[in-house]
Amino acid sequence: MKTNPSNLSRRTFLANSAKAGLTVGLLGAGIPALFGQESLPAFATGFTQQPLPYGYAALEPHIDARTMEIHYTKHAAAYASNLRDAAKEEGVDTTQPLEQVLASISKYSIKMRNNGGGHYNHELFWSILGAPTEGGLPAVAGPEGSLLKAIKTSFGSYEAFVAQFETAAKTRFGSGWAWLLVDASGKLVVSSTPNQDNPLMDLAEVKGTPILGLDVWEHAYYLHYQNRRPDYVTAFWKVVNWKAVAERFAAATT
Picture 1 (cartoon, rainbow, N blue to C red):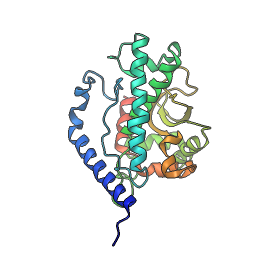
Picture 2: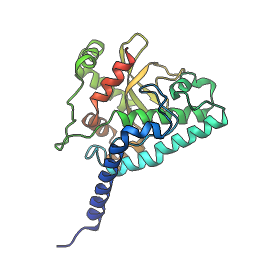
Picture 3: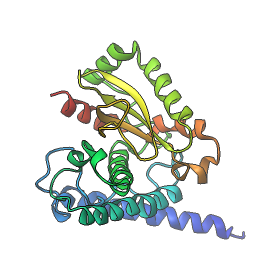
Picture 4: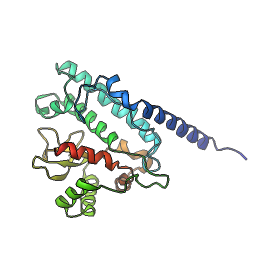
C-alpha cells in the first residue's frame, strides 16, 4: 500500500510537536526563573516570551498544530522581540510587570502600545488554553465554584455569558480580541478591543483585569477555518482551561 507523503509529513509533524510539548511540560516549573521572571508577582507578565505549557498539537482538532506553531514562533515571538526593542528605546524598566506599563500606555509610543499589548494578550491566551480529552471535549466542562457563581450573577446564566462573549468575538470588525474581565467593582464584564489593545490600557473603552481572552486575528485561525470565524469561536470552548481562568478570577477579586 502506498503512503500519502502529505499524511506522513503531518504525522511526523504531530509526533515531533508532542515531543516538544513533553519537554516544555517537564521544564515548565523552572521556566520563569530561567527567563528572569522569578521576582514577578503571580499572574504578572514579564517582557520575555515564555514557553508554551503544551505541544503545538495539544489543542487538535480544534486549533491545529501548524497554526499554533506559526502563531507562537512567528507572530507572538515578534511582539515579544519588538516590545523589548521599544522598552530599550523608551527607557522602560523591564524588571517591572508589563501590566504597569499598559496601565499608562497612552504616554508611550504606538510601537509600545501595539507590541506591549500583543505580548500581554498572547501570554494570557496561551495560559488559559488546555488540551481537550481524547474525545475532543474540554478537560473541564465549564466554570465551577465561585467563578460560575459570578458568571451567573453578572450574566444571568452560563449560556447567556457564552452568547454575549461569542457575539463580541464574532462581531469585532477586522482584527482584535474578545475578553471576559473583572471591572473595578468586581463584576464580570464582556468586551472586545481592536488590534492588540486590551482592558488593562488606560485608553480602553471598558477597563478591568482580563481573565479570559480570545484572539480573533485571522492568523489565529485562518489555516484551519479560513473565513469561518464563527466556527473558530464556537470551537474555542473545547480548549478553555477553566481551572486557569478560575485562578485568574480569584487573583483579580482578592
